[in-house]
Amino acid sequence: MGRLMKPNAFHIAIVALAAVLGVTVWSLWLGVNSDRDNIHPILNQLIPAGHCACQTSTIFKCDNCLQCPAHLPLQGTVSSSSGPLTRPYIDPLEYSYNETHCTTYFPGLFEDPTRAQSFWTARHGIKRVDIDNIKMVDGMARVAVYQGRLYVLKALAKGEDHRRKILGILASIHRALISAPQLAAIPDTEIIFSVEDKLEDVAGPDHPLWVLARKATEESVWLMPDFGFWSWGHIDNRIGPYDEVVKYVEEHELPWDEKEDKLVWRGKLSFAPKLRRTLLEVARNYAWGDVKEIEWKSKANYLSMDKHCDYRFIAHVEGRSYSASLKYRQACRSVVVIHKLQYIQHHHYLLASSGPQQNFVQVERDWTDLPHKIQELLDDPIKARMIADNNVNVFRERYLTPAADACYWRALLQGWTTASPEVTETMSDPTNVANKGIRYESFLLLDSSSMMRFRA
Image 1 (cartoon, one colour):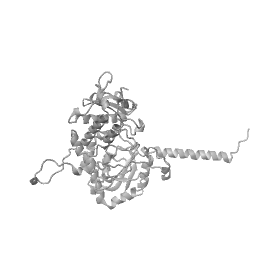
Image 2 (tube, rainbow, N blue to C red; image 1 turned 45 degrees about the vertical axis):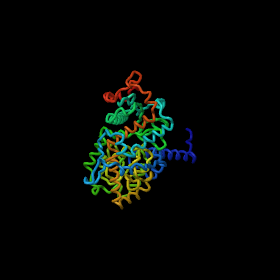
Image 3 (cartoon, rainbow, N blue to C red; image 1 turned 180 degrees about the vertical axis):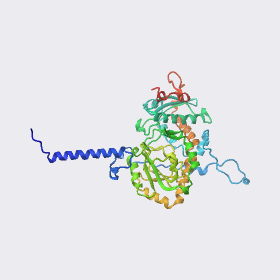
Image 4 (spheres, helix red, strand yellow; image 1 turned 60 degrees about the vertical axis):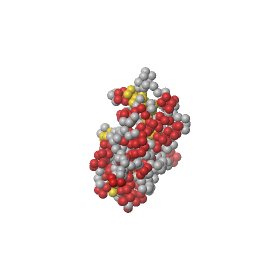
């Protein structure tokens, strides 16, 4: 028999290096994909930023938004003997405000449609070929507005999640159309929208696509309110329509003095591991920290959205891109603490991080200033209460109401049609032989499988 070769130092070094590399790769994979709070802080520093892009953020500045409500026209004509003048009453459930009412009651809400309209008008407008050049993939729908009604031309959904999100967007557009005070005022048009989290998941940066969120550099897209304003919830966790969530919070929310003097956060770590794990590490050693991961299989550490309102301070963290949970946190009379955001949603222009209109607290993306910011709030409860009250006044009671939602959708359609006159001029009946579209109401009657591959 041959003699066994004795391993030399070189072979040992190679094996050891391979072992170290294997353990490192496995550890990084675990850190990125695990939803358990079981990763050492040193390893968390090695996790790549990935989609959370921790070196970039968007600073929102809108000088003409929150100052405007102080100058709203007063309601009615009041004589000197009638007492003081009153502010106009905004009905949060009124879907049929006209354009004048919308711009008066919700100043600053329409910043992004105005921005997108200016962007495309400077490029000589949106042509039909610009829409046709958008490659339809899962999570997209192509729709037409014709004589004030909504038609579905094509819809692609990978599964139930896509299908329900698409239905939420379609329902929101439909509601805005049928509640419009003048149907004829909305020109005929065609649109393609995506319910995916990120533009780069579905298209390049130069298409006139309607999306849920965008980076500051993604200027060609048009921002929609997310599907959750219509309704949302997983099969085993039904959240419901947003206004129903708000109503429940208003009826059951604890008084400010009875709320936990702590910062709360619950979420899935793997959606943005570096960003979210860093929050856990920073907050875990403070008495004010109630920051935990959720393990969805066992529902460990689960906290319903309304129970977040039992805390004075609520952290908000982006996920793969934006996080749709912000609106639920803004339903609470609490201080929402948000890191510098990378993704813009339609209502983010109303965020104010300082001054008398401050309605949230902004921290760095690496959370290094979080302890200082929380301590400031604990030391100054009057300021904390002011920020919480402003949060409710601006978002829950005004800019995130169904009335504001309907106004935004109609403003979005108006801005779009203004920037795309050629599309309007070349519109034909969506139900003709060439288009084979279907009215939204009839689309709802299709079975799920037909919806998910409609005209595919």
